[in-house]
Image: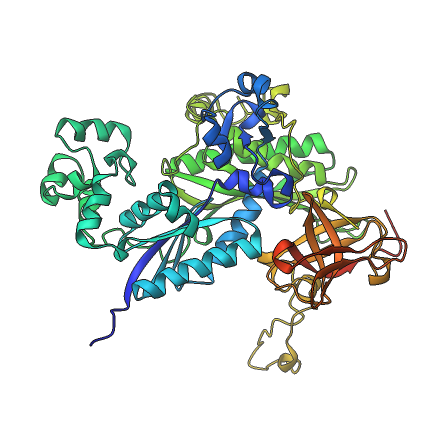
Length: 432
Length: 131
């Protein structure tokens, strides 16, 4: 008897209810309770735990509507703690990466990795990943495994939707017989597939293509001609042929965009530094958009002159994970302003810069409802660019960089948990 | 921020005599938290662990990748709270012991009844508050 084949497969590792799970890491009282996480300014529900889903809390419901009944149903609400989520995401991704030769960090809570082995070996590897991530970080993850990315996502849907699989937390598409696979694909609406959005779904429905099985039965070449090469790939991947490669190097380490300048006169006050940062951030947002890209991570820094002998050198720096990848100028400006709070008033700073990293092509990220940047969809960036092009640099600007300071810029985060991994003064307290 | 003591630049063909000694500055983070991805910092509040050298207000380094063993100082989940105690695994029970005679020990039937959140590896105790 020949040994079982040790095939290369793709695993999609995804964090279960990531934001709610992050809230639970430092607050065990939230375990088994319905937890909802609110958008910017505590506007509406953008994420929730499984318990809240079971209660029927609708995604996107405004908090003022949910608040009156929240207490009676035992629902706990938290403001979005982006600092915590970004920090825990980086930890989760690092631990996942230890288990694979290749890793693609796909979003804040999803990562593709490659594994090799028999079906049983790979399922065991999936279990080890789950155990390791839970132990090291406190975040529960689920693993969907298949020969292709598209089918790995299908396998993950199985973990989410089938009670027995959700207890195991790992599903390998290759563990099923061809007949069983057909049954699984026939149970998956085509719009649940990776990259098949609602509009495309309606066009497919007109052709009587309703399920993943229906789509898999189509002629790939015809799908390309009628729709796109993307849909052709989906058909091929549903049949088990890998067409969408793993991005071997994580994008976040590849590209960055920097805007840094020396000042004509030293900057010595917080308001002046805010103004500088607003202008730099706006410049960067414009460049980013012109390049058709979005950024997820922002770093801002300032420094004193290395030649000054009459003051202590000082080089403050901040990093922020933006709520979603964006080229939206308000978000980028706001992210960089925290640096102004770190300067020592009176000290003469001669240079500052803003750096955007983790760049990706625009429009790829799936934005949770309500969690998008506040200016998104209002065409703010292009409008500002058009005004500047016509009337010159400095004719219009954001906040501190131009038209004064709208008070609404202060984000409301009334139910914010401690930023326990990024702020010394917000460390979680343990009882002795 | 890590600083290279010597970047080993070769000038005009003459290697720096100190090149063989190129090394990195001592890095406190590497020393105190070798497993960064699984390490969290928390603040201690209370007086039950003074015998273990943990004082009210100290910062604790917690490495969750370490499997808890007899004798480790651990953070356990008790009634939804994170609590610091010494883990003692005995023949017929598990004890979370205080290290201050004024505080009681807590017994649990077995290790499976206990949720350990992480193993405390270091207590950062400030001896001169300068700011």
